[in-house]
Length: 217
Image (cartoon, rainbow, N blue to C red; front, side):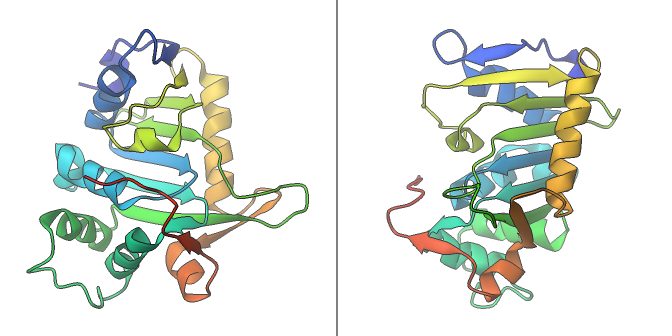
């Protein structure tokens, strides 16, 4: 089954749709690449993907994230260890299986995270763009925008809407979303600087607080 086989709507909204069940789960289950711009990376979001979908768990799908630079303190401590080479301070034999699975995905080059930080007075606050791309093995693409950061986790209960575009029905819009993401990934976007996660962490470019990103099992 490919993305084109999913009965997709042009818009999903919380008052009339189950956005997670009807949109995210089918697309995540049938893609080989998931590109996402989000306000922050959470440990729960990463572990949900790594444990909940066979295509990610079995090394068949890749994830690229461009995130803002704010993190929850406890999440950052573990994410930093997961992305270190080798995984310093992380005992993969005794740690939570969810963390081991994410670490394996990182080792297999299935997960890459970059950090976008505003570098202009024209941008106040942090990077918070909300777009995503699903790509399948037939090169069909589903793009979306408008969703909140928490829909990266499957227990999201925020009220939100998602606008959806497909490469077979709205190619120009999808091509624009692809170009926007690739420009971010290659650090070619005005008003932000984009760094590899490890570089941003080692050079103290990340902000963290115990009050941010409260997502727990």
